[in-house]
Image 1 (cartoon, rainbow, N blue to C red):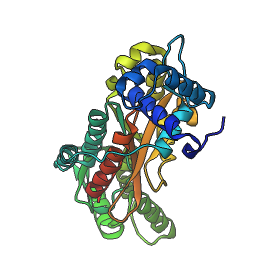
Image 2: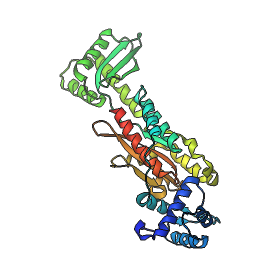
Image 3: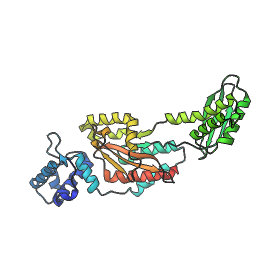
Length: 347
């Protein structure tokens, strides 16, 4: 059924629908007419409320699960609520301080990404997800230092100040001059380039005869550059934390749904592809249940936002995943604030 504009609902229907959604998000249980009448906000009898609930069910906005007398919002109803009725609640000062203080701690960017995922999980009560940015360091300096006759240490210094070491196996009988030639060539000709750019430049110069490196030195340069490229390709594209949060009391009601969701999260590449679809979004994106094929069976929702560096370039996506009864009004601005905070850190 196609969605209907919220303006087509009567004021009474909007009030009752909003209360059903809010109660369901808060408790995860079906909401009945008697419960709504007892709240006193509507000044309506249970019979009058039941009549409106039936109409909302006919419109496809509510459903009565199993034999329960109560109703729950459908995915169509949740979309109507999110797009037309939700009033977002900005993160509190304490929440903002918690996010910024943890992200502000010194350490490599991978640690900050893991913390981001954990923060989102802790504050949302769902599972937090962060896409690892595909960043290639630009070379400031690389040295190849012999350790013994069969091993050397390739030390890369990036222009961002990060230093990484990788072990290289040396062929038997390699002269010490090959190490020196390789180091001098990289420092003089390849500084300021990414690993891919440096490798391409080196191949061009050797092929065209612009540089006179012997075979042993050329091989060292190739392998010295390759260890980082290979390492980057093996890094996980997605960090997920807080899967245990998905096993809340609502999970006991629908344990099969949670099992399917946890299976979906094991397929990180598929989840990463979903987050990629939010990469060019101007604002936080919300995927509810079957709106995305990946989570059609588990009936889960994803709230995702891109994060940018200081130049405004999108470098990754972060978000949360949980049951469709996520507290969208609270989580959406929290995801947005975390994305902006992480972006300032990445620079």
